[in-house]
Length: 135
Image (cartoon, rainbow, N blue to C red; front, side):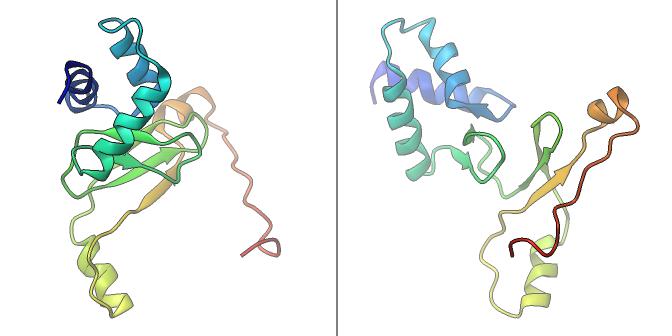
């Protein structure tokens, strides 16, 4: 592994946050000023494929990356986009009991309005999509 690859991996693994490729790029660029954004993306994709880091996809924002490889799920604030880890004891067993098939893993995303956003606007109203549109 090159020094640059080690630096990219260290940025992700040492953070307690879910980082975008742009955030990782900004941190790595201070030590490697000539690094290209494409290099960051290629290495993040490779590290995620090799299960050295976790890619958090399917959120309203771009893919995020984290170093926490333990089984867990996520919440995302619909107002500000903040992502947080969610641990729900017994969730895998609950899902398996209701689905009936062997549940190998879960990738649950809970949509929330975070407490910070609720403090800013206690009257926050989230408009539900029309149930007649889409699936």
